[in-house]
Length: 178
Image 1 (cartoon, helix red, strand yellow):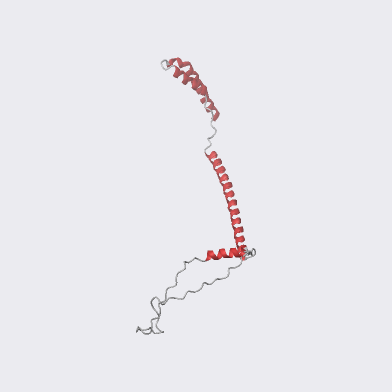
Image 2: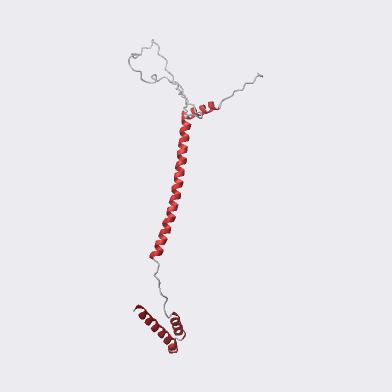
C-alpha cells in the first residue's frame, strides 16, 4: 500500500462536468415498485390474455437510461465566443451613441436657454426713458411738507421753485416737438 497514485483532471473536463450538472435537474432516486409474484397455477385465478392491456401496479413502464448528448467544445475560436464578442462590440457602440446623444442634448439645451434669455431681454426691455425733470426740486418739496406738517405755508418758496422748474420743462417739450 506504499504506492501512491495521482490523477490529473483537465479544466475542460471540469467545465464539461459543471455544464452537465447545470443542464440536468437532479431527481431523487425512486425505489422500484415491487412486482407481485406470479400466483401458482394451483390457485384458480383467471389470467388475463396476452392481448389485453395490463392494468394495476404491475403495468409500470421500464426505467430508461438517460441519453447524454455531446456539448459543443467552447474553445477560443468557437462560434459562441465570436458571437459573444460581436454582441459586446454592439453594446459598446450603443453606449457610445448614447453618450453622443446626451452631449448633443446638453448643447441644444444650453443653446435654447441662451436664445430664450435673449428673446426675453428683447421683449421685456423697457424703452429709453427720459429722466424725470425737476426731480431734485420735487424731493425738496416733499421733504419740506413732511417736516412742516402743521405749518405747510413755510414751504411756499420750495413749492415756487418746483413750479418754475416744471413750467420750463413743459415749454422745452413743446418747443422740442414743434
